[in-house]
Image (cartoon, rainbow over all chains, first blue to last red; front, side, top):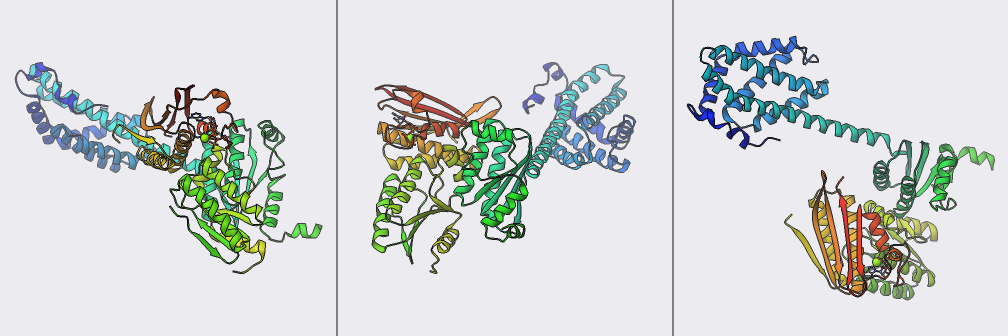
Length: 297
Length: 120
Length: 133
Ligand SMILES: Nc1ncnc2c1ncn2[C@@H]1O[C@H](COP(=O)(O)OP(=O)(O)OP(=O)(O)O)[C@@H](O)[C@H]1O
Ligand SMILES: [Mg+2]
């Protein structure tokens, strides 16, 4: 990331005539004077380049106005916090619309280009001045592009992390089927991280629902290595420490084998063939009458 | 630090504080066994809700308490183990095997009342 | 957090204060409360071994930086009798004091990294780390 000092360390040659800050002031004045025209040019370029296609013309125009003003302000004050906050805010609004990183970086680079062209046009007869102005403009413009891009990428990462978190929560739902009875159907691949999350979620669930019996159904678990099998055993033990009995259902012969290999006494673990049978046993433990079984006995 | 022991009908209730030292635990063990004998209690509830760490020493003490109380014809129920503490305990390998557990004091009392069919 | 925290271990009271300080540091470093409980439990075991076998020692708790990650380090050092057979001491259920023999192997499971050095008659140092998720 770029620190504040980078802008101050503009090459010494540009100091010969005007201070860079003086040049920037002149530049800012130019950009303010030609705001309407330059912004229009920029918006046209954005649609020509087919960027921000997920947004309407009006939306693009409104954002372009805000970005333009923030951009000029950042050039003037050399303070990037406001721009950074704006970038984050903008990202928050447009990421859900499906706007991609390259589009955001693209529009900022386009703006840099539009402004540079207008500087060429203005100073085409004073080549030396043009060079000095560009020397002052470029580092600042690069920093702005950088700030916006970094802000966007960070926001995107945050959104992705949040989504992953939500997906994980969804993929290990702790369901309360009746009072004091929880079901934890585990589906898919379990890695140690997910196994741990699952255990913590279940333990919290036992507490908040005051569960006395938990059915862990592992029918949907593809494979289980020794680490994860150990986790399962620990989950059963920890649940008992909270006063809940665990019934494991859907144990495949392969997983049963893994458990035996790591020394789990399957006789000590409460296992029942399938989920339905597990729920029936749970209800017996809770003292409910189970119709189907009552008929059999 | 004193561990309060409360007599509730045929049961005794001992409430652990967060920062019990080994000496406190040893003292509690002696106190509980004496009171079980004195009051002819049928069961002891040890409430560990306030304990934020349960290490091997505390766990071993609880097991010993349960064992000594069983020798005097009464039962022990440990209540109030926090979810995070339970997770740490099983990682350590502490499972309190052979000792009854319940979610909290209310559950512990319900369990004992059911078992002994007494109404306090 | 400034530098590192040291807790002198001389009695069973110090075990409690060492693990309480460990939890505070873990919280400051942004560990989840579940992880903070694991860390505090590990400290409790290491401090207890010092009291039981070496009588006195020192627990140091500090922040550590790894590749792209932050963590907590706990070092338990004493100048006690040392451990004759470390492999044996790390086995579940091995104890010379008639205890459960779960302390050292348990700490190894609670933390991410575990290192032990011991010299007979010189002392024992256990250094453990846990990384933040
Ligand atoms: N700091 C130490 N100095 C000397 N010996 C030690 C030290 N720490 C552990 N040991 C030796 O290693 C053995 C195993 O230690 P560990 O903590 O795993 O079990 P424990 O202390 O015997 O029982 P528990 O911790 O379950 O109550 C101890 O019995 C002791 O002989
Ligand atoms: Mg020990």
